Length: 76
Image (cartoon, rainbow, N blue to C red; front, side, top):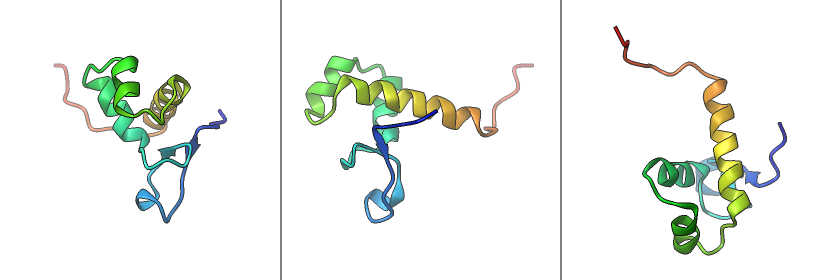
């Protein structure tokens, strides 16, 4: 999967994946969505973002989780 809006720069935000070279980490956007914020609320708080940035951040996060095993609590 190719990401056109996700950038990584070792000299910016400690090399964290960010959106379009902005100092807005993917994790920040994903966290806001997880916290219940709507796209409109996120865009109002970060006017440099676009709706496509939010969608790509979520696709990127989904792929990142797919690529690793995370510690989970057993449901039993």
